[in-house]
Image (cartoon, rainbow, N blue to C red; front, side):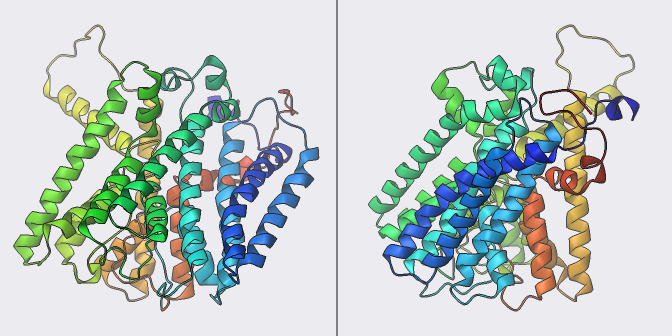
Length: 482
């Protein structure tokens, strides 16, 4: 612990305040969009959107007097992300409450939106256009925010960052990295969204369905315009949405790396290959298990279900409460893995799963040989990456286990409880029927906590509440500690 504590500095509140306020300014501008639609359509939520924009704008103005730091510590960046998702979900619950929705359900919906999960306790039949667009907008904004922040905050400086075409300045500064590549990601995100909306319109979708379902699919969010999710839409629309879910679960590195014509990298390409292989494997397993247990479902329904589970999109075309336990267990496994790193998907991510497979293979290989021989040029696995992957998987499983025990203590079905908890923690959004207005408020709050932990990959929330993040030596704003 000595070498770590020697370099550890506490969070500087002024730095956190300034960075958080900058993000609040952006969020205020983004919130104007659903606010304008609510005003133009005469929605009761229009004044609430105005209040949210006003609060965010005032916080941005008040923090402008804080100094702009030259460098940002990793723990400060993580604290900012944790505070941003938590506070934005509380603020965005206000417009939902305007529709007469109780606070706990409005907050649940807002958390599900900004974390791109898709779980819902609400009845959405006959809801106005402003309501449907507003919840999809939360997911779309949450999806792009996650991509930009993940690429900036969780990519290590040095070799890992150079794979993505980062400049030396980008690799040296977390905030600078965000500014440098955010434009690339935003452009790609906008292009895919525009193409998706157009494709859905061509497939026969109405304008509001095309906009909402496209935004929910590309963000792998899962909010649909119908109580039965996608059960009632046409086959062409369904396949377009499935394609958009896959597009959102692909690492955004691949999109802009291809545009920039940078060199191919094995790990990044392997994530794409792994996503396709795992989708084929999961679909096959679900189909085989379904036939063995006598589940009657069409191939289209099963393919949509497995795509939604693997990409963590959360759409469905069938009643999941009737799924046999064996099918639920298979889906839980693939939901936990999720999509590619740097995508809008949740879960532990494919790159970490590939890394663990690599470590397991190397361990087995070393155990099977009688003499260790060094091979020149052999690529080793970076120890810090292995530690991070093991730690995140451990925390993920611990959160799932503890939350599952709470549901069991409340008398809920073991398999349905496990499915619901993994769906929330992996930000999937599929429900086995437990998530509803009748769910006790304490369990709704627990699932909200799971969704936030899952979207923040747990570490950011742990850093936020760790005493050592706030107490101890601090760097001066211009690099000197005090």
